[in-house]
Each structure stands twice: as C-alpha cells, then as structure tokens.
Image (tube, rainbow, N blue to C red; front, top):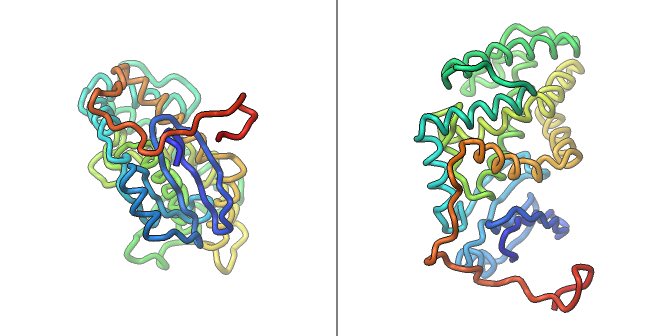
Length: 279
C-alpha cells in the first residue's frame, strides 16, 4: 500500500489508484474478497479499510479511521470549536454550493436558515422541471413505505450520496461527526459535504426516477447514482474539496511531528523517470 493514496478495488480485482496526500486507504467494493492476513497487515501499517457498495453508493463498514493518526481530527476539531474559523468554513461551503458570496455579517445559524429556504425553493423548481407533484420534504425512516414516491426517491438518492461522502471523509482522515453547518449527529460533517453535490447529482436522479413511476425506484436510483458517481469522478473530487474548504478557516493545518510514524511499507524507489515501473 502506498502512503498518501486510496485505492478502490472492485469485485473483479481492478484497482483504481487515487493520490490524496498523507492518508492510505483501501476501499473494497461489494463482491471483493480479502484475506485475514491482509486485514491484519493493513491494521499494522495504518491503512484504513473501507467496505463500500459499487461506486461508493453504500458504506457498510470501516476499519480504523484516520490510519491511526489524530492530526487531521484535531485540526478539524480546532476549526469547529473556533467561532471565527467555523464561520469562515461555513461561508466557504455556502459560496461553493450556490456559486455566490454569502450575505455579509450573518451568523452560522442565519446562514443555515437562508440555505434552508433556498434548498426548499430548489426542490420545488426541480420537481416542476421533471413534472413531479411535490409538497414538501417529509419522510419517516420508521415507516418507509408510508412516504410519497418523490420523498422515497430522494431518501434513496441521498443515502447513496452519504455513502460515497462518508467513505471519502474517512479516507481523508477526518471525523464524520464533527460538522460545521450540521452538528450533533454521527454524520454531521458528511451532511455538510454531501450538500455541496446534492443538487448537481442525486436530486435530479431522484425526481427523474419518480416521474417515471418505476416498480423498483430504490434499485433504479442506486444504479443510476453509481453510474453518475463514476462518470463525474465524484469520489476523486470530495477529498480535495474538503481540504480547500477547511483551509478557508485560516488556521494552520497540522505539520508532521517528530513522533509521527513513517509509512510501514515505503514507496519503492524508481529505476527511471515517472514513465518507468518502480523496482
């Protein structure tokens, strides 16, 4: 395993290598087999194992988040606990989500309220675009079938987005629970990040699926999200976006400490230029 990368392995053993910097992670898609010895080795060398669905639409389980390191967790916590830094991060999220500067002199709570109103309006506009009857975002996880079709489709689609986003958050070495806009939930930071991509990815899929009145909407949405995530390289985009958004908090990111353990399996030295295979 190479330090500073995550590798996605599908059921056919095909590996996609994506450098992320400072973190080593192995994502195993459904149907992949891994030996007990390999899991033990990953734990010893600080490589995070994440079991995901096809295209990352589900996150089933994860090993030791952060690769046995705490520097990024502490950095994230510092930003969340500093009122000024948190507001800067939230403003950057708003800027990226809506493509415009957030209103000046607004608190996190005020920006959250403004964002909620814009989200409700966007739901209405997309529902009209796809010819879907829309009342409001309303669902009960304890009574799934009682919800109307558009809400069921939206819940299925956002579940896929949360899966791939949580996988990326864990792969980058951050805590899913330490959010900036959302707070107090196990996946607060996942919700923060997923909201940045929701209306360009899964919400149109949900409404277009609902418009077709399919017999198995959840399955159709899961497959459509899988294909969309792969087509747009969503998993590759999330981690750089996390880094850029947290940098907006203007607190210095952690530097390697003298006690930091180096890669247990260092990268092999190259025999030639980057076009050659390493020895």
